[in-house]
Image 1 (cartoon, rainbow, N blue to C red):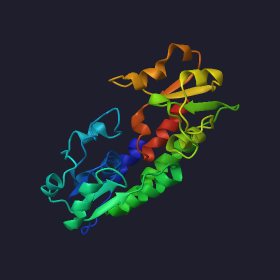
Image 2: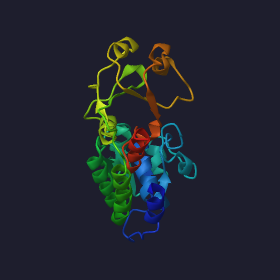
Image 3: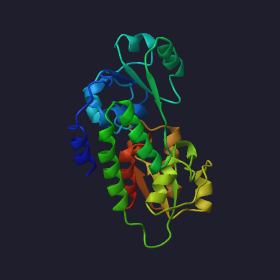
Image 4: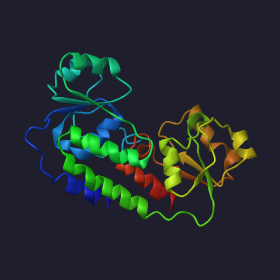
Length: 251
């Protein structure tokens, strides 16, 4: 459903006055640019092609990449820069001083916020009519989720033992899946989890390059706790595709 709506989005026309050469300097804005207006891409960030982080990695290989350098960006002659409200701020400030239009997009932490982000990004890109099909697909995915028939506690456990608070994007994913978040955003070691184990442990997919931080997630003592793995690319950045993380948890 989501991919079908994306294909329909890209058939919608573009106003002649809209920006034509857009550079994205952030992984999260990379994804919105690829989803909403790929024909406008002048360059994406160097994280856009990483399949462990980027939902659009397969498509991103077709577009140029640019490092977060004002000189490198200016060489591309962009008429719009997409950036987040963190990261590469020195470069973004330099570009603004050179008169390049910059749009800093918010990073939402719930699904209503994702709908607003999608509308804002589409408006900034001059394709406002392309937002609603993506939002509609997200809402259909969420509406199709069947919550568990009994109270199920869950903890989203990240590398180094970090957990997801209720007010985080992952917290919103757990709630949308009908799960009860048993964490508050604090760090939890394996011993703490064993003392008060949740019904379900949510972990990121095994990384290609494991580390001491990620080894904690596979502690042998925790193998008795049921778990689900989610692709980080669905939840590192908020987007209409984040609804697919909810669908995976509800299977």
